[in-house]
Image (cartoon, rainbow, N blue to C red; front, side):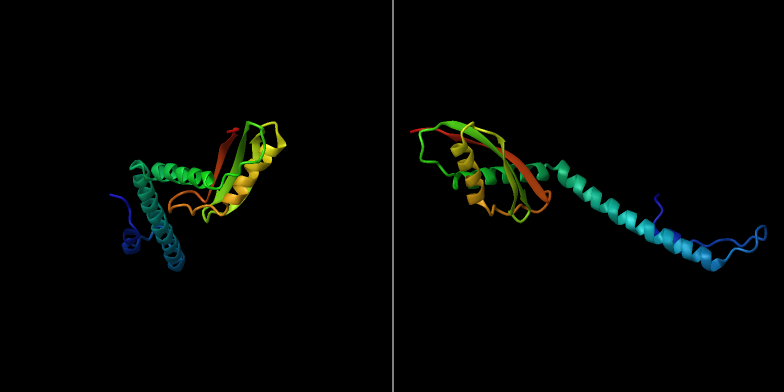
Length: 152
C-alpha cells in the first residue's frame, strides 16, 4: 500500500535513549516537507494518469487530426489565385498558436516562380486569424501545406 500524506502526518515515533539530542521541531519541519512533497507528487501522478487515459482513448490524436482538417478547409476558403498563366506548387510552412494567431510563415519549397510563392504566402496571411485550437492540444502547431496553382 502506498504511503499517503496522512500516513506521514499521523506517524508517531517511539522515544529511544540511544541518540538523545534530536530537535523535535526540526523533525516536525522535515515531516511537514515530506508530507507536502508527497501530496504534490500524488496530484501530479493523478494528473498524468488522467492524461494517459485520454491519450489511450485516442482523443488527443483525433482532436489533432480534426483540427488539421479544420485548418486545411479554412485555408481553401482563403486561397489567393494569382492572375497569371504560371503553374506550379509552393509549399508553405506556418505556425499557429492555440488562439489561432499566425506566429510565422515561410516558403518551405519554392514553386520556382515568385508570383506563385507570393500568392501562397498571401493565402496564409489572408487566412489569419485561424480557428482556435480545441482544449488538450499543444500550445502551437506547425504545418507544411502545398498550394498547387493551375491554369483553367
